[in-house]
Image (cartoon, rainbow, N blue to C red):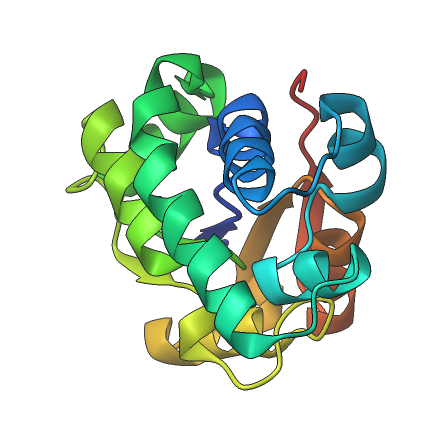
Length: 187
């Protein structure tokens, strides 16, 4: 069966955003009197959605969670100079689209963070759709986001290839029934 759809995780797959994300979280947490290191973030929390990450470090108050999340979103653009596009993957995606295929971003990231980085990289008009954690009830590692994207595109798992970097994303990709590739970018 012919591949019709590419589904791409964003952070760590399309764009190398690890350092910018981690630095933004570290700064937002420091304002709350909470200290974590870059290495601790990379080893324990990379790839987690914000609520799971904050819960894992012991923050359970919804007001504090919302404040940290808002502050992280505010700080994040000041670190876009640390963000780079995965140019080989992006060039492949654009060649695929030029032959009539579709490509969608499917991310656990917050929509504002994704669209801000896409704008910064100048790629916001080079995809066929975007799903974030806000678009599904159950996020990765459940396959719901990938299955919803396939449904939106009118394709089956057999017609889809997924590109992912994190363990939770790879678990979701496998559970979706589509073929998938692991992307490894330096943090």
